[in-house]
Length: 228
Image: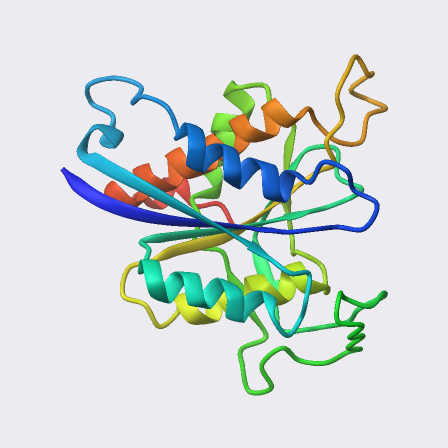
């Protein structure tokens, strides 16, 4: 039995958002776990999983340092950062973190960086380390609306994602990536007109992300990766 440590981050507050999936989903996964293995051949049978969550400020200066302190304390095998995409209709699996801060509105510290690199001498971009194909296939099986997103924008989510992958690039075997959740939308709403998903469906999606990432960690396969 192999012990794996997973860190899942979210953001602690968004203005005007009453139910924040980037806080609720990580909390639910830590409390409820990711469920039983699918069958006796499932790689999850060989794993003892520990999930640690951390809430981050929507701050260019402080989001990454807060996550990094948790990473240094936990020494995780997998780090999944999550955020909120207001206009999304489903789960957005982020493929790429770009070396750019270009804020259209201030963060919680009233910082408003414009056309500024996150790390001046850093690469232009990093690709996610999550098994996107396997995750998207799970979403389709479970009826969860989802999309592949080219990037996480140019606000704090992208800045955090870039710092995370920059850190992961120096680690021998750590999987890391970013998931954007939509707004929480409950009740009977026409799916074609609805922006957002019910919270329980988003928690299910978060469970799929963790399960497939753990499986990929245990049994890596190039067929699980989908970047383009």
